[in-house]
Length: 225
Image 1 (cartoon, rainbow, N blue to C red):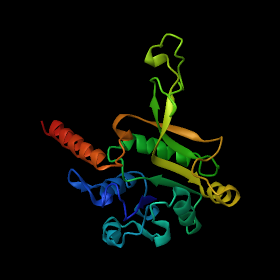
Image 2 (image 1 turned 90 degrees about the horizontal axis):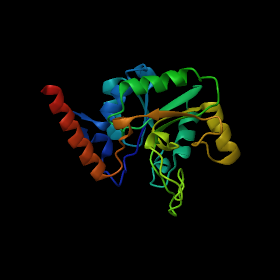
Image 3 (image 1 turned 60 degrees about the horizontal axis):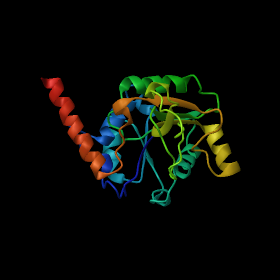
Image 4 (image 1 turned 60 degrees about the vertical axis):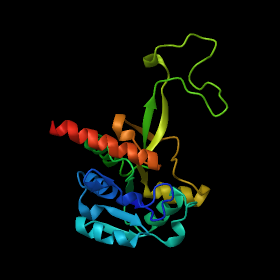
């Protein structure tokens, strides 16, 4: 399931922004097609103008209700709505905001999903950081100020959500939403899948987008030389 909201405010029209010769949406659909059949892929959106895009790739168009497309709408809410309409065991969410997600890492993530089709574990993509980290109050998370700083390879890794790839069991998700009103973060049995390097680039702002365009141009030049 590829979620796209028409009213993106930080990067207007983000799904149709170009990276090289393709839009962010096209990049994500083509990535999904490297592992899944078109009949298994759903574009979840309130943006009716994207219907021709879905049709051109022969993927499913799921029209999201308008009340689930506000700035305050949570992933829990629109995923819950989506799963209530799906006859499935598990869903993979692929965000169209990480255009450099590698096909190799995507395939590895999906193979883990296949091995847990019938379980209730949630699978979350993360980035690994072996560097000193502090919390919002400036307190150390993985080091002690009174001790010598160890080599970075010996530091305790800190993991941050990448979110470009997430997977949940339908049974778990709907049950958790019913019992506690949230399911996005899974539970204690989560599997954390580490992404590397460019796969972690996420377009959230105009500055992010411009950086992605510049990076794409540089990659194309290297390939053509």
